[in-house]
Image (cartoon, rainbow, N blue to C red; front, top):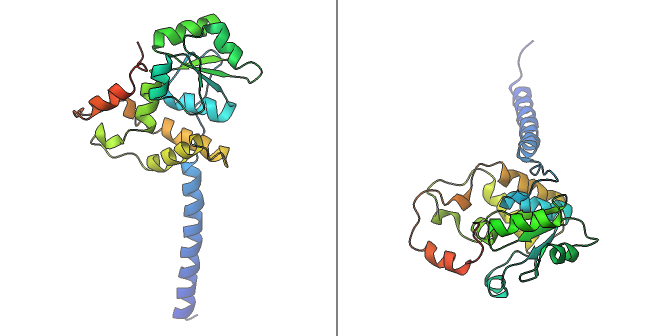
Amino acid sequence: MRFHQGWGAAALLSLATAYAGVSMVAGRSARAERPPELRADDAALDVWRAAALVVRDNAVIVDVRSKEHFDLYHLPSSISAPGAGAKAAVAAAEGKGVLLLVAETDKDGARLVAEGGPAKVHYVKDGVRAWYLAFEVPIPLFTDKPSPYGYDEALGTLRGWFRGDRSDRSKALEAVGILSKSGYEPTLLQGRKPASTTSAKKKIAGGCGG
């Protein structure tokens, strides 16, 4: 049988189209990431696990820092309750499920969790400082390494969710999964710290862990 060049070209084109389709599906599946697992007794949550708790479980965020620090910067949709004790903080989330605390220091957060009952109460490790560095400050300020593939897109999706675009919870959760498993942690201030970070630290005073 003689090989017909037209048929060969058509066959190759079909194979290329099919391969492209499979690659897109496979790539999409490879990018899909489950958000980090949480245990009920996890007290201190890093910024990505805290985000997962809010997106997935509709955690109520109660900020017990001073009003001055709250006004400087706070997590989206958080409730300001300056100096609130464990009972008052838990009462703010009564009937709403899980509680996420934002305290002046990690020591304060751990104490409130212990007093309020660890089953459904957590606090953000390193407070608003961690959240601010992860969500608000351009990453190139803190590291010379490029962000991993998909990191910027995932961060944009999660930022959008916290800024009010609640149209697709599953995409926001997938974004948390990508960010948490990327191994890329802007909160660690990798690389050299330029002088321009000073103003950022002043702006978010009162949110560092201790």
